[in-house]
Image (tube, rainbow, N blue to C red):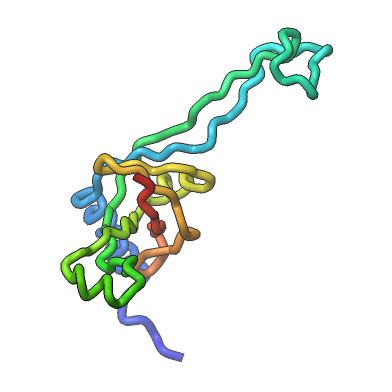
Length: 151
C-alpha cells in the first residue's frame, strides 16, 4: 500500500484554497423553495371537503428563499431542434439555445437546495434537473447542480 505525498495538514491547506477561489468567482443567486403552510388559527369545525368555507382554519403560505454565492457555468452544447435534414440545409445558421447551466455551491447553499423549485440568476429562472454531485480536491466541500432554463 502506498503513502500519500501530502500530509493531512497540507491537504486541508490546499483544499481550503478552493474557498478563496469560490469567494473570488462566485456570484449571487436567488433560490426559492416550496412555500410552507403556516396555520394562523385553527377551528374544530374545519371542513376538509370545502376548503373555502368561512369557518375553516386560517392558513398562510410563507415563501422560503435565500441568496447564496455560486460559481456558474453555462452549457456549451446546443440541442439540434430542427429534425428534418431539408430544414437544416435551408437554415444552416440557426442555433437554438438549450439553456443549461451548472452551479457550484458550498455546504450552506447545497443544504438549502434540498427541495427547491426555482433558482434565479442573470435575469433567468432555472429548475434543478439532477441530483447534487460532490466536488472537491481531497474532500467534497462543494456540490454541483445542473439546471435547465425555464424562460
